[in-house]
Length: 118
Image (tube, one colour):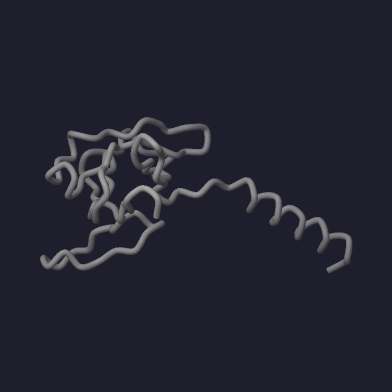
């Protein structure tokens, strides 16, 4: 590969990597932002220990131009298990966080909201 081509490819990868936003849950002043990449989905919601696993309670908005769905949930400090529900039927792990066995042969995504100041 010519050096010039290598440099262009390397620059493209670096620039593209910097422009990619994280989809990991993010603690904000008003809650936790959850994001999920599903450009072809017709709906995405989140169900978990914070809403009694009800897929009807917390719908995400989207998709944005990058195919990302989002919501902000006002969660107090604590440990939360959840999954995204795509098109009302497919329960999907959040690939941006660890998961753990739910004791029923499945896995749930795990996120911890730390107390303020930590």
